[in-house]
Image 1 (cartoon, rainbow, N blue to C red):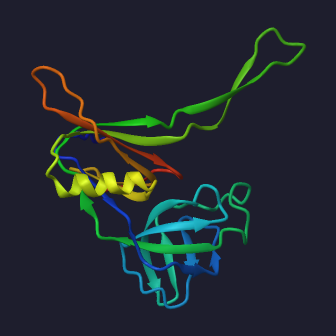
Image 2: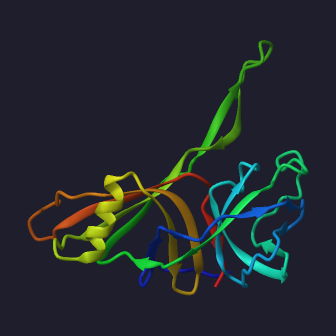
Image 3: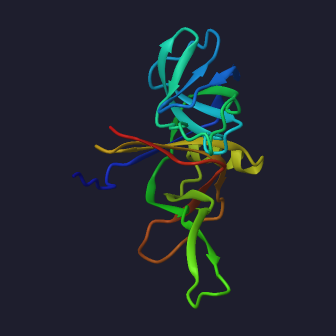
Length: 215
């Protein structure tokens, strides 16, 4: 059993994606193995995946280089063919690089991601049943220190103004890495309260799942 604390956590973003490479096949396995001719990926390369499988689409997975033409998508268990129909997981992979650290983070909190429930109300029963049916959209909220001269903050605001998407990586001391992908929103008007550092709000709404890796 292990416990981790948030102190020392760093958050990085990237909107630098290599050219898409075609995934000609993806196996039903744990982890899934992708076929991609002369992919050139190395172990631990973060890859943004576009896939016919909902639970793999718009997610960032780390690669496990197997051969010149195949690699594993670590932490993608596609063995259940009810949710990962055989032959339909093909798509593309794009290597994510050029990670930039989000500066002056004061607070981190997730948003959304909770379980969605449906209610079953049999006519002949007095008690309804509650059944999980999926998950709410999820994302990440940050508070960062206001600094109108900081080049990284300006770059984040520029991405925001064109509705740009970014990959996100959290590096947690002793606890590994968490990836997400979606639209970045960095505020411009500062939040002020007496006795506290002036702040800006930053948020990322994820298009796909958040994928976690151990240290």
